Image (cartoon, rainbow, N blue to C red; front, side):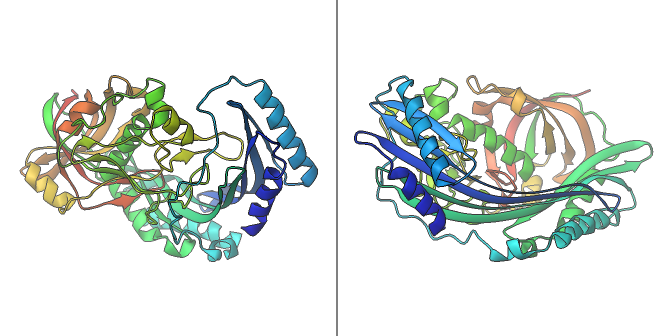
Length: 447
């Protein structure tokens, strides 16, 4: 890590009087293996490093990046960013982050062991997963994909305004997508396991989950339309939270793309609803010690007991909104400038299992999966419509499988109609955690 900080120091040392200069230095190693019928279908292993440089002068911002850390290239990159700033539009809110006194959390996010795992062992994990899925149930007729994915990343941010931080993370997962068939009906299912190193992964559980999700939908029929209570599977809840989180960013608010603009302090959901963005939770797949501008990440309570408490901000959106950064600058890599967004969303869990929630519901639908969610949501009005499949809930127990029905509502109504949050919080290979969620009144259309 000291090497990356030293590179950042060399970049920032080139700042001229009146300039603010930032260097984001990244180094990463990534592996992806996919197998089919026991053989390698695709394999990729890549190492990369690079630097992104921002220069701010008199409210004008310029940016440039390079995929090498050689001194002469660093000098050229700073000069290019400086030239780009000269052509930028002046904005009084442009400026780099400054230390804000929030300490960087000590998080256990890195495992040396991941880099030491031989490639053959990673391939073997994907092959083991495929075999386990095939053996989980006689009705499993095919495995669309069985894959192993990992990533190790080092990052450092140094600025002329006093920020000098770094972080290191590792993560991996296995995932299977399977086909089940019975009496001419074919259904699909998936399962996965996440961890910081391969030793954390539970291949048997990933295989069993994939087989169960596929086989329990065999023989599914279309339900009749109406208004029913639904229980969202944790994976479905996580997808909705990702949509919700996007509407709670300072970027979305300032661009007029959020249904929650101007609603701080108002009731926006059920009093059972507390939504937190906490990248300092080491259980989160996307946890991190620092954000894309080098500030310490922190626990941000966005909705508390149904009341909207805050949006997430980077330095720019915070200043422009009259607030401050919430340590929520996000970047897709050294080739991009920072935006503002949620990093590790979760609902405060309740104290009841999914089975207990289903028993409480009595009659309704367990929604196992949704399709087309991102394209079916209007972030300004909150309207959404998405395809779904799942299981009927009858007499407090799971019943027959259901397919090809549509859920239609608004984000506002869904949040207001939250009846209960489950205890089964589960971090997924994405920026939101899953948990079973009971919505008391949802309109569905089917047969």
